[in-house]
Amino acid sequence: MNVDDATTSTGITDLMLIEHEELRTRFANLWGRRDEADVAPQVTAGRVLADLLEVHAKAEQERDVIPDFRIYTGSGLRSELGVRWMTFHENHRGARGRSDDDVDPEAFVRDNS
Image (cartoon, rainbow, N blue to C red; front, side):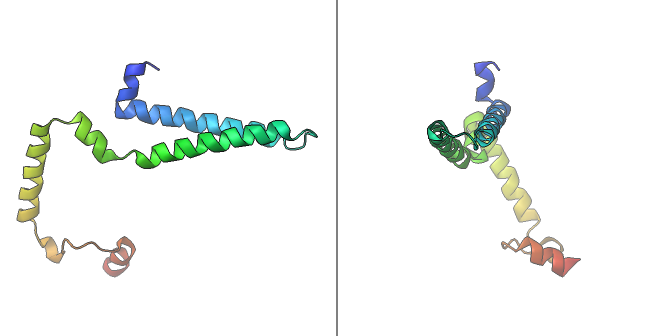
């Protein structure tokens, strides 16, 4: 993968998928060594893997769609989209008797099916 590709949303997703596969492979290798007499290498490998997994999990939690949107979208487009959303929202307030309150999706489906 080209390093420049990693700056796009797809590139970041590709990198995360590569990391997932690497972590799976390392877990499988570690599991395959569980019956070896000398456990020191497995303990060391397990600690390294745990550290890698923690770093990977934190990176996934910190990654959010909104920061990418802000990084890759100019302020003019963001402003235009905001105006369009507010116009749509105002024109469709209470459409079909629906409120814009946050609702439980399961309750909504149950009550409206």
